[in-house]
Length: 292
Image (cartoon, rainbow, N blue to C red; front, side):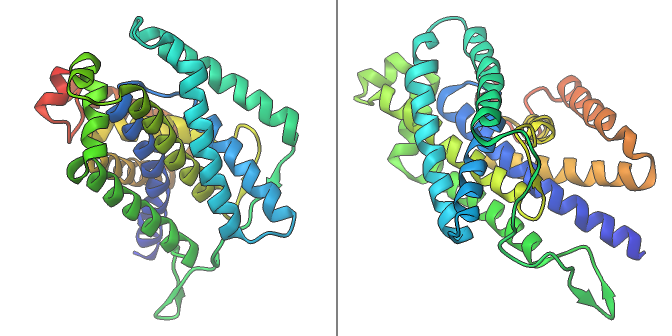
């Protein structure tokens, strides 16, 4: 029973990190209708900026704020300089560009910060809580990760449902010409969407890095699992991204603990194929999103 509880907690914690990355994919999809495969590399770049500040003697929280701000600037610059020229063309062009960015940014990180493995400090303790004299797989840092993901999800839901900026971002994504006729500054909304998505992606990079090792490609596995989580929940739904992330985290934890850790990647692929075959729009996709 204790093993089942610990495996479940481990799955929920891993799933919350997948959910954080999936939220970044959902945000950029809702605001621009583009799947950004470079999100992982962009998050890794801002994590290394935070690590450089921490190693220089600054606090974790200052490094967090600077990393999120750097993520916003990086996302806005990428949209303006790299993505904007291919917008309006075939949708595949933007996808190919993000794949190129994924490789280019990862190489740039290796050039600037090196390719070695570095430890990234956690803001809270990594020792599990004790319940009834038994240490469980839930740490203060894990609680911080869960809370950060839930707060981000609520903020995104509020942004798109209750603010004029969120409505303008969605209008810009679904119909740019109509949005312009209604007075929406489409270019600014697209840039804002990329910037905010990069902020959420940077947060996910910092959450997974806390208490572990970072290197230029440390986000690669998270990209795959985060994408599966986003597709499972529905690329258009922040709530779906969180539910999808937690579901993927739990499923992979059970596979790793009770079957074979080598089957984890295969299990993620199987889940993705089943979702695409049974419900291509995801569990929480609206009918409007499916038609789009």
